[in-house]
Amino acid sequence: MNMREEVTQLRHRRAELFDADVLHIFNGQMMYDEFQSNALISNADYVPFNEAMCVHPASKPIFDEAFIQLRAEGHQSSVESYRNIVIEPLQSLFEHHYNAIVLWFGEDVFCQMNLLTVLAYLEQSNYKGKVYLNNFRDDEFKVSQTELLLGSYLHVYEEVLLHQQKPSIDMLPVMHQAIELHLSMLAEDNSVTRYIQNHADLSEGELVERLIAVFPTLGYGDLQYIERIRQVRKV
Image (cartoon, rainbow, N blue to C red; front, side):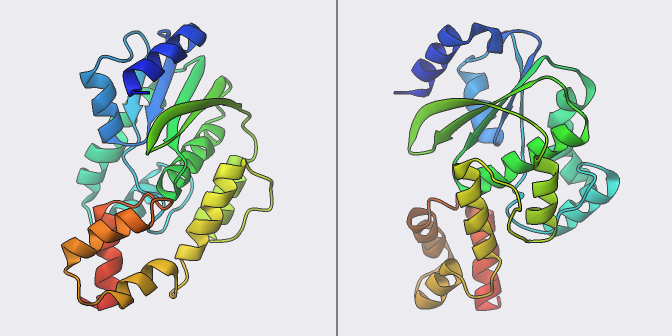
């Protein structure tokens, strides 16, 4: 099923989640652009979450000045650039109250660490509306919708993304699996670094393509893999 058909079905089943008092948050600019260019959402507001929380140190409070500074440094970006790419697109989230928020995030590590951060921020900001997760796999745009209850995500964010520890609270299975995989990637010797070491003959570009194909459950993009390759090869 293509994206337009799936969204049409969702709108038919849950029309109230496409109203003006609802905010949709997409995992990244690419998905945001696709929805915008195809006019898939007309009444509700929608924004992209342009981060990669699966890499580099994080802090709390989420999105405060120290967080912005730390994340910009991790991405080797200026604070101004980080604000333009990550913070500015989220202004609707910061400035308006919505009756419901719909989160469009996939099942891989990249998406799930971003999802965890957004949920933790909603708790931090004392959000009282409804929260829905539209979960999907990248290889097939088939959406599974779940209503989420806030209350434990900020604690899990601290455990996983600040202290690199396994969560002490039961999570949705897809998030639990992603956290396990994310933590395994923090070890110096992991499946990705071994793959890089075992393919020293490949160019950086070829290796990036291979890694994206071999490790789909990570969901890393070019930038994350290039950084890993250069760390391993000490470039």
